[in-house]
Amino acid sequence: MNDFYLYVITALLPLSAGLTVLQVNPYHALVIRGILGAVAALVYAMFGAADVALTEALVGTMLAITLYGVAVRSSMVMRLGIIDNETKNKDAFPTTINQLKTILNKYHLRLELVPYEDEKELHQALENEAIHGTCEQNLDRDSSYHTVTRIQRLYEMIKPDLNLSLISYVNPLDTKEKQS
Image: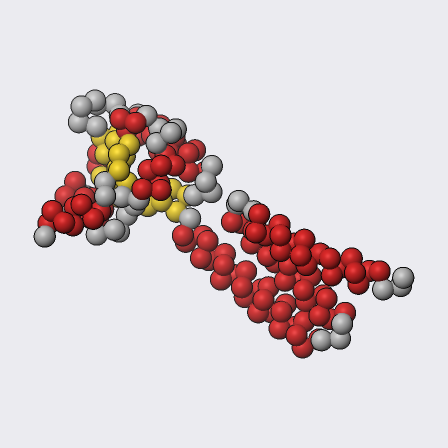
């Protein structure tokens, strides 16, 4: 009966592992992964494996969380190319960008705007996969912007919330085949 606290602390391991797997937000999963590592280090220390506990605390918790955090931070971004001089002093552009940010926030993505000098440079960046999509002023209508993405999953996430005439998907394999 006096070892009851050992059982309670040990039971936190599968509980925190299960919570880590079930997280939708990757940042919440990182926090719970840190808790999992701390609990594991505590369990190792309680059972007399101080060297393993120290290794788990340093490598399994601190280093892993730092590396995972950097990886999640750098991969959870949509790089959107824009023509720099075309977007200045336009009322519809901030509205379009704010709408895109709102949509992407639901999926824990950030929006990074990458300015280009002209349309040719912008489209070349999309073909070279330097950016995930483009946002250009609609030629048909003066007050709206059209977004093109080369990533089908981004297109599927954005299209239900954005007007279908304002977003389209371009298959990068099709453009490479046309150039060959």
